[in-house]
Amino acid sequence: MTDLAALSISAIREGLQSGQFSCVEVTKASLDKAEKLKSLNCFIELSGQSALRQAQEIDTLIKAGKQGPLLGVPVGIKDVICTKGVRTTAGSKILHNFIPPYDATVVRKLLTAGTVSIGKLNMDEFAMGSSNENSAYGPVQNPWNPEYVPGGSSGGSAAAVAAGICPITLGTDTGGSIRQPASFCGIVGLKPTYGRVSRYGVIAYASSLDQVGGFAANVRDCALVTQAICGRDPNDATSVDQAVPDFEKSLGLPIKGLRIGIPKEYFVTGLDGDISAALKKAIQVLEHLGAIPVEVSLPHTELAVSVYYILAPAEASSNLARFDGIRYGHRAAGQLDLKTLYAKSRSEGFGKEVQRRILVGSYVLSSGYFDAFYLKAQKVRSLIVQDFQNAFKDHCDLIIAPTTPAAPFKIGEKVSDPLQMYLNDIFTIPVNLAGLPGMSIPCGFTGNGLPIGIQLIGRPWDEETLFRVASAYESETDWHTKKPAMN
Image (cartoon, rainbow, N blue to C red; front, side, top):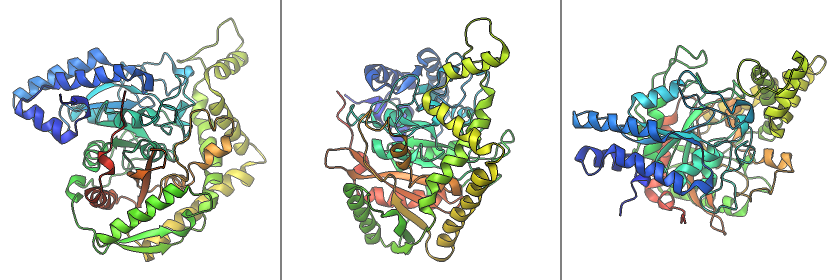
C-alpha cells in the first residue's frame, strides 16, 4: 500500500492530476501519520479540521482544471512563523496563548500556491538552540534513533520530513537552524541569501541574521518550495528586489568546470572522522562529474562563534523586550506593580537558554561595554564577509564544507554544557554572518547509522549553483533515498 504522506511533490502532483487519489486523502494520510508518530514530538499543534477543509477546496479546483507545482501538497510550518487563527508559540511558554491575526508572507505565498498547512512544528524556544531540547513543549526525537536529537532550532521541521509525515516544511536559520537539523535528519535544507525571502510575520530572534528556508527529502522538492517563498515584500524592509530565477531549471545541468572551494580552516582538529571521510568522498564524486576542487582560505572562521554569540544575543535582547506580559502572551498572576509584573512574567515565561542570551545581549549593549564587545564584533563580522568575498572573487564558484563538526548526539548529552552546544554551529554560523546562501544535503551515515550532511555555500543570490551542484551529486548517489525505519 502506497504511503501517501511520504510521496515526493512530483508524485503527489501526478496522482492528483490523474485522479489516482485526492488531496483530502493525501492530507488525511499526513495527519494520520503525524498522530501515529506523536512520540517524535514534531508538532506543537495539528490543524486537522482546517487542513481537511483546505484539501476539499483544492480537490474542487483540480476537478475544474487547476494546476500548479505545489497544488495539494501538505506542508508543516515552524512555530516561529505566524499563522492566522492558529496558535503560534515560538516554542515558548510566554506565547502559549498567542493566536496571530494574520499570516506571515511566506505562509500566504504557500497557501496561494495551493499547499495545505497541516500544523505548527516544534522548535527550540525563540529559535535559540542546536538540539530542539530548549522547547517549552519538550524535545523532538530524531526519526533515525529516538534517543538522539534531530538538531535545532528547526528540529520539528526536519524530523517531520525525515519521518515522511509531509514532503516539505518551513524553518528558519539564524546560525544554522535549517542546515544543522537537515544534516542530523538526513534530508535537504536550504538557507537562502539574506533578503531573498520575506521575514514579515516571523517572530524575530536576531533580525540581521534570521532567514526563512525550506526542508525536503530531495533537491527538486527543496527547489520548488524555495521558488514559492522567494521575492520582494513591501512589508519587510530587509527583503530585496532581486529577480527570482527558476530554480528547477538549474537541476540536471552539468557541473564540469565549476571550481569547488575547500576551506582549509574547516578541516580542524576535532572534526568527526566519519564526517571527514564522507566529505572527502563527496568531493571525489563532484570531481568525477567534472568539478575542480581548489583549496581556499577563510582565515577568520575561528572567530565566527564568538562574534555570533555577541551579535545575536544583542539583537535578541532588543527583539524580545516586547514580551512583557502586558499586551499578549504569558502574564504573571496576582496584583503586581509594573516592575514586578515585567520581571515575574518574563522569568516565568522564558526558558533558561533564552534568559541566558537576553542577559548576554543586554550586557554587551550596556554603557561601557558596547565598544569593547558589540562594536568590535561588528568589525570582525566585516572581516568574515571579506573572507568569503575574496574566496569567491579569485578562487571558486562555490564552497563545500562539513555542515557540522560532530554527528547527532544523544538527548540530554550536552544540555549542561552550553559552550559545546554552541560550537556545534561553527561551520554554519559564518554563512549567516556573511548573509550567503547555504544548503545541507545528505552524504552518508556514521558508524552507528546516523545521517551525515555536507554543506554547499554560494555567492550572494546564487542559489541556482547550489541547486545545480546538489542535483548533480544527488543523481550520482542514493543517500537521499534512505529512510528511517519508523516503528
